Length: 183
Image 1 (tube, rainbow, N blue to C red):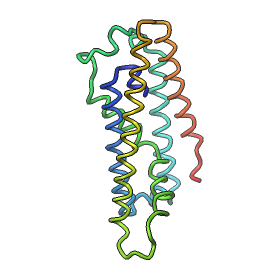
Image 2 (image 1 turned 60 degrees about the vertical axis):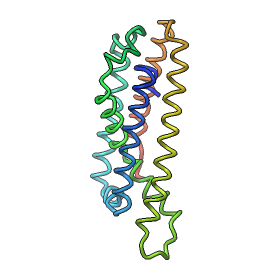
Image 3 (image 1 turned 90 degrees about the horizontal axis):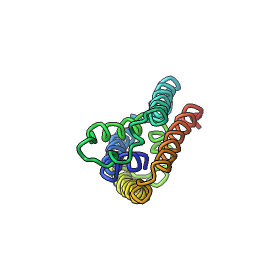
Image 4 (image 1 turned 90 degrees about the vertical axis):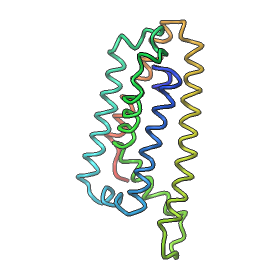
């Protein structure tokens, strides 16, 4: 949503695809049991957690202080957008969130029959369904946020407030992740 509001619909879609890409990585790791290492290692969990929190805090602080993002005339210009960087930001935002890996370990296995000898295939099917619906949801949010912002972009003061709220939201998420326990 933040990318859609700050840089337009295409940027929001690219960011959502970056988030979806990391979901595929988390699926593969969880399916083959590698995510359990993150769940069992307090040190590794904390490294990922604090790296993710620091990244979100950085993005939020940048949004709060970067005056160039508040110029709505340039926001949706496809020439000024670096879509590779936006995609990469979506990847980093999701990969540095240890809750995603823990979600796959804690939640999804409950939907797999434990009596099966090979649980990897059902897990991958379940996760593919989750990735698809999650990515569609992120795309809907990106398009919705862009549509709302398009209606408000002629009002610079409103755009400034929206950008500040998005920056504060990122900072809030960073703090929430930093304070998250392994539970």
